[in-house]
Length: 287
Image 1 (cartoon, rainbow, N blue to C red):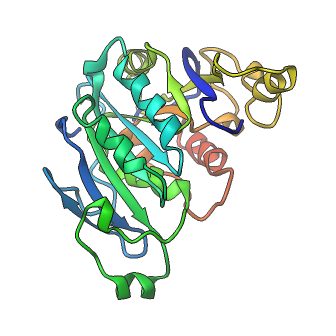
Image 2 (cartoon, helix red, strand yellow):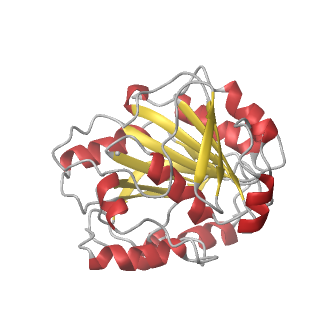
C-alpha cells in the first residue's frame, strides 16, 4: 500500500500473544532532539525525557492497566499523520490514551507544525531522530532541543524510532501504529480491554488493518492486503496464537515489560524487523 489516506485500523483483532508501560499526560508538546549516534537527548518546554542508553525499568504484571502509550514513527507524511491524529482524537475512550509519542525520523516536511496543531487535544510527546556517523554527531554536538534547531541527517531505521518510543513509554501497555494508519473509534478501547482481560505478560494483540474506504479499492489491492505480500490477514485465526511471520507492527500492542525484556526491535535490519521480533518473542513464550 502506498500513498496517503490508505488504511483504517479496525477494532477486529487477531491475537498473537504479549503484554506490554506511564507518564502523566500533558496537553503540550514536549520536543526532544535525540541523536542515534550516542544515545543522548535534550528537551524543550515542559518535562524532561529520560536518557535513552537503556530501557526504563519495566512495570510489573500487577500494575494497573488503565491507560496506553501510543507510539507513531513518522517520515514525510504530515498530511496523513494529521488524519491519524484526528482518529486518535475521536476515540470512544480517549481517557485511555496516557500519551502519544511521535518520533520524527528525519522528515523534511511540515510534521512538526502538524503535531503542534494537536498539542491541546492529545497528550503528545514529540521526538526528532538525527542520524549520521559518530564523529559527525560529535562535531555537530547536542544542540538546543527544539525541532527547528535540530540537525537532520536523513531518514534512518524505523526500528530505532520504535525503540525510542518503547524506552520512553510510560504506560503498562504500548501500542505501535504506523503514520498512515487511521484508527477506528474503538481501536484504543479494544487494545486496552484485551490487556485488562489477558493479564499474562506474554499476551500481545495484533490489530486488523485494511484499505481506507476513501480509496478506490481494486481487486488486486484487496488480494494484496488479505492474501499477498503486504498482509495475510485471511490466513490468521481469531483468538489463537499465530505464526510469528505475521507479526505486523502497524497496529500491534504489547505489555511494555514483555517487549523490553527482549530488547525491542532489531535496529540492524533494514526490513522484516517485526518478523524477526516475532521469532524472538515466540521463544520467550509469546501467546
